[in-house]
Amino acid sequence: MPDENSPILITGGTGSFGKTILLQLLQSTDRELRVLSRDEEKQDALRNQLRNPRVRFFIGDVRDRGSVDRAVKGAGAVFHAAALKQVPSCEFFPLEAVRTNILGSENVIRSSIEHKVASLVCLSTDKAVHPINAMGISKAMMEKLAHAAAREIGPSAPTTVSCVRYGNVMYSRGSVIPLFIKQIKAGQPITVTEPDMTRFLMPLRDSVALVRFAFTHARQGDLFIRKAPAATISDLVLALKDLFEVPDHPVEIIGWRHAEKLAETLASAQELSTAEDLGDYWRIQLDGRDLNYSAYFSEGDRMPVQEDFHSHNAERLDREGVKQLLLSLEEIRSELQTWRN
Ligand SMILES: O=c1ccn([C@@H]2O[C@H](COP(=O)(O)OP(=O)(O)O[C@H]3O[C@H](CO)[C@H](O)[C@H](O)[C@H]3O)[C@@H](O)[C@H]2O)c(=O)[nH]1
Image 1: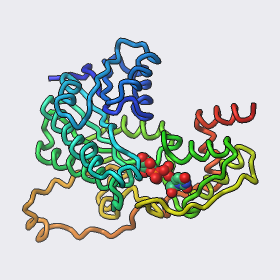
Image 2 (image 1 turned 90 degrees about the horizontal axis):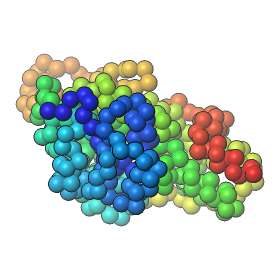
Image 3 (image 1 turned 60 degrees about the horizontal axis):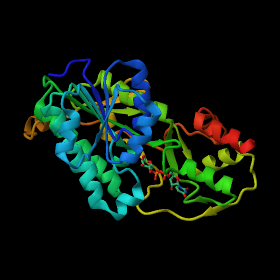
């Protein structure tokens, strides 16, 4: 059975999240670190960047159980970050989201349980709450698979299965902040879908901290949510225009994309009614009841009704607040430096 010095596996380890947690873990532990991902070019780039024998690379795909097993075998912890995460692409190819985010996640969950991995943390998104797009639906199903497995193996199993859920990661690959910066730099209009749309804004460092918190504190089937502030797209644009000192840069309203929401929800009212408030985080415990609900209906309490926690009622960052948060990111500071020179 793996012990606490056993390797740590990161699925999707060459992505923005994977790389950041990998670099942190290289500093903070002596454990072997494993990366499972599909793209040999990205792995090669990371291998050359790190040149560290403590990092082992596995080419494979979470869709393929054999390749998952090879990477999981002997590991003591697994961070499951591999996913199709772009809303538009999942919308056009929903079966691909099923294959990677649902069936692939089931492979990672089952393999971790069979190989007695001590802690498995699955990364989810706010789009999994009241989902309306294929990406969110597939992530909601991943959460369901994790919960079902946790319920099945019970609290004393060698493996603890947990999930974390967070909102938009600022400056992540393919997201709107790098796009807006590219448009400013190229002198092209900033393309805004809907100025009043709100999103939770989270620096990558906070999402990594959340995963590490879950790794240390999870009980069987827990879901952890990081409380985060939100902003409108219009304030995000104004903040970027201020920072890049382009007050008159043109903005073009392009309209909503496929299957977008005006606001995102990080925690539903039902979840909040049983949540444990841990300061920066909420812990949503597994609903451990079995399929026989009769005892609950005759003996259980009525759920207190609360509001969802969504990006319209969360702490709202104004233009100045967004600016300060943007400035706290090294990537933004370096973008500004090159822009000014
Ligand atoms: O040209 C554009 C593109 C996007 N937006 C808006 O900017 C916001 C953020 O868009 P992103 O594409 O950056 O992010 P999404 O909210 O669509 O989804 C993102 O956040 C998710 C978490 O909620 C997942 O991480 C997902 O992978 C990632 O794409 C949205 O309101 C969107 O409508 C624009 O105004 N103009």
